[in-house]
Amino acid sequence: MKKIYLAIFLYLSVVSSYAQKVVEGTFSPLVDEKIINIKIDYSESEIDEMPFEAFLEVENRWEEGYNDIMIKFLKSLNKYSDGIIYSAKKETNYRLVFKAMYVNRDGETKGHLLLYDKDNKIIGATQDFYVKGGRFGSQTNLMGDAAERLGKKISQFIKKQTKK
Image 1 (cartoon, rainbow, N blue to C red):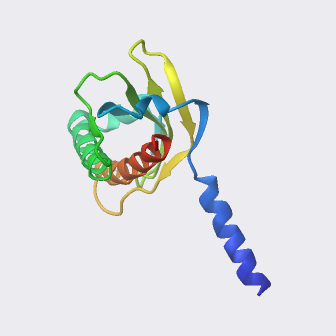
Image 2 (image 1 turned 120 degrees about the horizontal axis):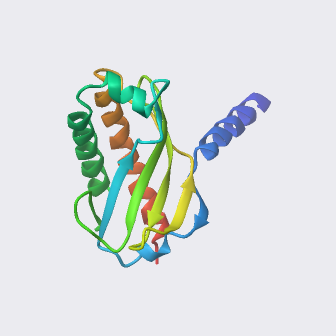
């Protein structure tokens, strides 16, 4: 019986260690927003154990790959959004940026979410968003698989933060 309780405790500890926590400001200004601008920023990340700049030298089709990643990300966000429309192109009152800090060989991604106002001031920040990557394909394909999972996770997080 002790082993079962220990296993449950360990499981809950691991799950809660990947929970998203607001560490700065608030995401409450998004309560009445219908359209939100969002993007993934890899510029400060380490991808497959390389700084982003070195990754760009190896990944010669990054723009095409990034577009595919964003398409998967936006589809997932909008699928789980409950009425909010997420867009990478439309200018809005607030802008969400997922700062990817680490991406491994499988596309597994860790980072944090930032909320900016129109004056480019951070008004909300989280710690520790984590999603698994994919199983097959190129590095950008695996990152796209992670972006789909990330879209769902961010959408769920924003729903929690904007409940009235």
